[in-house]
Length: 419
Ligand SMILES: CC(C)(COP(=O)(O)OP(=O)(O)OC[C@H]1O[C@@H](n2cnc3c(N)ncnc32)[C@H](O)[C@@H]1OP(=O)(O)O)[C@@H](O)C(=O)NCCC(=O)NCCS
Image 1: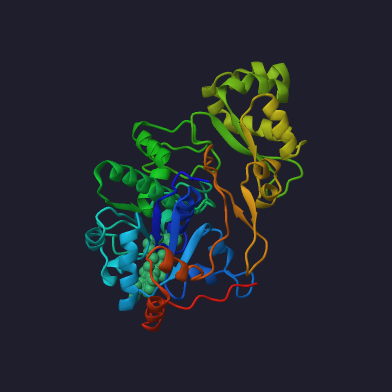
Image 2 (image 1 turned 45 degrees about the horizontal axis):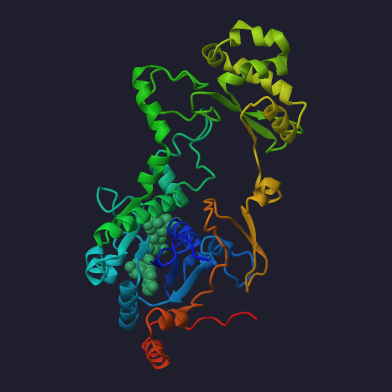
């Protein structure tokens, strides 16, 4: 079936997580993504392995629907293949450390000279300018430096990283948006351009509402926070406070296990119904909670009342009960809960796949649903699985040319496919 990005070919040099999550999305949208790997492969193939000698889940979960070619860029014959592929691709993606592509002889100016229509998309920890430009970065470094960690965690505890990979996968999303915009621009002008996304910038963007609070602090207290904020110069950690205009908190439920909580938003419009359900007419009429301002002031007492009520129910029972009252709420779902959740299953968000080395495994599905061209998820490629196919189909090389490139050390021999 024709997909939204059918006809777009991507030369994907990206590695580890930040780039590959982005290029996997592009592949799910229908682009032909050629994963261009060193002869040793993306380092994640061998990291955190759960099955001996098989590509790790770290790799398989981030590299579906791609084709793999191995080429040694430190070899002149390998560089020749790279240049020819650049001429045949619409997009080049990479997230190497600072200066790596320059050292290989392929800065943007050179890439643009080889193919003026190509969009080159780079992720760097801190971008290509500024005092941090030469530094490498990983997920938690970006969360630390982009304001994510200082605003996450309990107010009286240390800074925390979030489980959501906002530094890596969050940056990959930003890169995809930039690439799509640059391709649209190319349709109008015929010219490619350079798209750069810094992980630190992406985390700052994802922490935007924390900057709302940073500036509000100059004018007084943040009334929605459950801790005193008077005199603070920086947005504090706010635990499970809602962070929005409505009050919210994680409420403990039955039977009291580590994930037996439900997040409840006491939206202004639902207070009357909620109060009647948990404390009858008396609570609904209690002046201490009559307005959102009063509820903010007495939120400790309000949460205690809600938690007392919640202690008789499981998180699933509470979800049903509160949704009947139109109260926005969400049980804290563990990965175990999600893996067997009917809603997740029906939306194809936990997808069973096969793999020649590891057998059955699961990937998180495509979160972007297109009505006319839905994603068709296929397993990740073995290292170099498509080297010859790409050289023949994309570059038109014949067997003797491939053999002489092989002899010249341009790429490794692909591993044998499992039966
Ligand atoms: C993630 C990161 C810290 C990893 O650092 P690293 O493992 O030292 O890897 P680098 O990207 O710095 O270097 C890759 C090396 O592989 C080499 N290489 C890459 N592809 C190659 C190929 N096809 N053939 C031969 N060599 C290749 C590069 O030339 C480079 O070698 P060099 O150091 O001799 O120049 C770094 O890539 C980085 O900061 N990236 C940008 C930020 C980012 O995306 N971080 C999140 C990752 S999830």
